[in-house]
Image 1 (tube, rainbow, N blue to C red):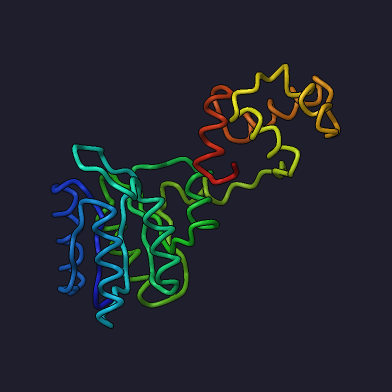
Image 2 (cartoon, one colour):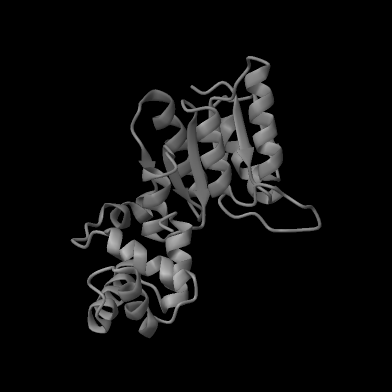
Amino acid sequence: MFKKVLVAEDFDSINLGIEQALKDLNIVNFQHSKYCDDAFLKMRKAILDNEPYDLLISDLSFKTDHREVKIASGDELIEQVRALQPNIKIIAYSVEDKGYRIKSLFENSGINGFVLKGRNSIEELKKAINLLAASEQRYVSSEIAAVIQEKNNYEIDDFDVLILKQLSLGVPQDDIGATFKELGIKPNSKSTIEKRIAKLRDFFKANNTVHLVAIAKDMGII
């Protein structure tokens, strides 16, 4: 079982639930951080003291307040902690239910488990902790497991990334073809670009191109 746990969560009520879950599992050495910056500093200090944490449980979204922060989200915290301490086990504990974002957390950020906050989340969290402590398997809440496993035949390629970058720069969809022609990028026809953008919107379930760009940025594609 894990011996030292850090919880990054900014709501006291949720912290209390996590605390009870840890106690139920006989984990008594745990600390809380309401800010990602503080959590990262605790991680770094623990390593310097040769007493590293072996589990991080982190929310993904943190409310902004008067305090200026360097690490604003759990996503960023997870990435920095993974780089700092590659072997630590990480559980994301969040209300996030978008399949593409959760897949990205596993594939790009290297989380070991994802627990969806909800009515049964404390029991799910305990299951996740038990599984991760005993094996190298990953844990995904049952409510979203099917979403994570969904297959899609469409694969993002370099041309898609170029289109997304143009949209992120504010280039209107109708003008991307002309930009590509100037840069010598092919294909560059208006119809081809329109079809690609339509496929990307469908693939990411984006409401519009602004939403599409936001999703692509969240996933680190652009």
